Length: 58
Image (cartoon, rainbow, N blue to C red; front, side):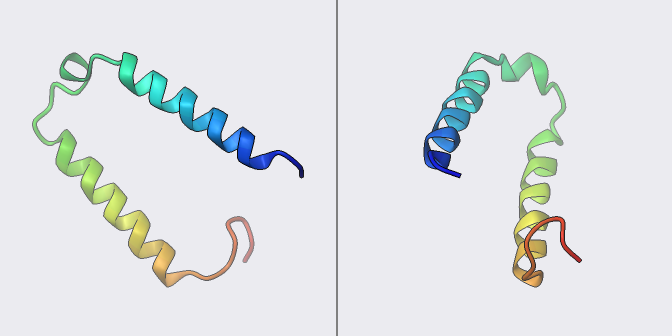
């Protein structure tokens, strides 16, 4: 697939644009939301360090 880096860059710009446009105070009116996000990110990193196969393969 040619141009995949351009697709990745375009996707990141779109995602960060959506993040910037979101009113996070109104959206995350829960004090535990930050801890849940950090916990999810930590779990993803731990799971990735344990696995070695590409996503979708067994």
